[in-house]
Image (cartoon, rainbow, N blue to C red):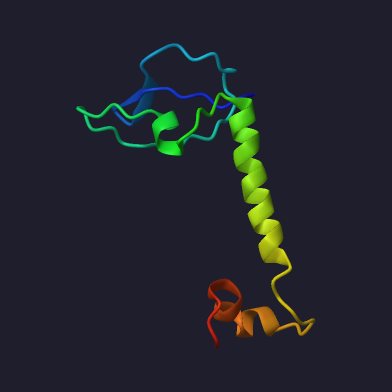
Length: 97
């Protein structure tokens, strides 16, 4: 299921969507709640800097994140069990410990 963006209103302890949502009843969903200033109706696309309904854009972002994580994974240079924690700043920031 692709991500959807909806405007909701919080009333009496309940989030109420302003438009009908095509969702399965009683299914649990994860939501990101962003406050909107009344004069600035910012969309999720504005916040993310890409359209979350654009599958190619989502895949591109995921691929960039995967590449960044893969580059970080191999950054510890020894097999010592405590090396990555002892030299944390050096590996992350390029500074001497």
